[in-house]
Image (cartoon, protein in one colour):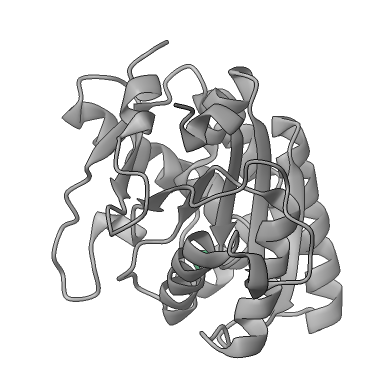
Length: 252
Ligand SMILES: [Zn+2]
């Protein structure tokens, strides 16, 4: 019997441009190298990610940065056109997500942790979970279904600092060794030049790339490797429960 992962279509569905590059780009690169089709989708164009520019100017810059990052994967970038700080779980957002899922037909979805430091992330996580469950139901959308579409494997990325908003450290179910992919992951993150500047001004973080490298090194130490990305698999009713990422995550 074929498994959803046999279709080899991976999608990261995140809140903002650069979230995927921080949290799961190394794994996407691994999958692309294995012949997978890859997609990075964001809820917003990152319209508040600036101290000086208009929403339109920064959105244009950031969608171009995200497109360039996805191109390093050989992947496609999508944006649902929501606004920073205003991502909600409602009917219009769900409908846009269902239609995008119909067009992509993912067999594997990455999204934010259900509990994270920012509500945009939590709302995106909920929408990704809902869309994964229902997008292949015949009556949910008028968009045509790609052949073989069904409930995909769903994995939650680490929350910021691997900690939920109540201070609990998240224990992953699954680690993917991204040591070999780390340079390309950093290249993808570096595409987001606007944020390297803005984070320094807003958060006092002067090390956009270094914070990512510290995180993957921390997860890497847990499995005895130089760099890893970590995930929690969604194992609710009707979602695929075999931890297929763990199988590919150990191979070099
Ligand atoms: Zn974000």
